[in-house]
Length: 132
Image (cartoon, rainbow, N blue to C red; front, side):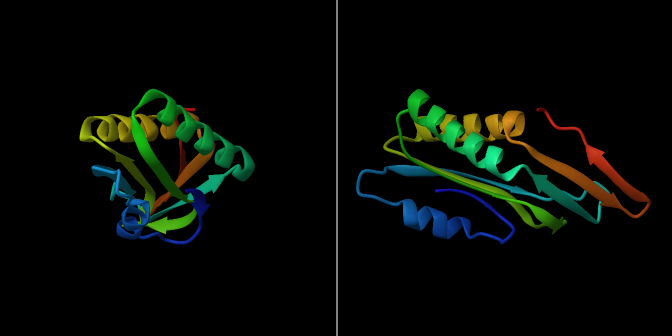
């Protein structure tokens, strides 16, 4: 499942739904809004391109690692400190492939998915340069 959403998500539910008899383990990543002196942030997306890029990253992970499942949810809209931003769940027969694939996926998301971040502080707002 690949999804961009304004709604929050349940990482435990993502894991439960990905379970199969062949999966030996899951590695998950949960990105949250960090308190760097901000009150909130807006995440804006080029939706069609972002969905295509997330699907391509998932395909790359399947091609590079011996994994069984990939689920990614990335939120957009106004988020406050502590809110969930991105959830990734990778299932594999063995842990090494799941760990490596999960790290690969979050690194690739930061590099290439067109989602932009504007942080709001008590003294104003600023766009945060991304890696793409």
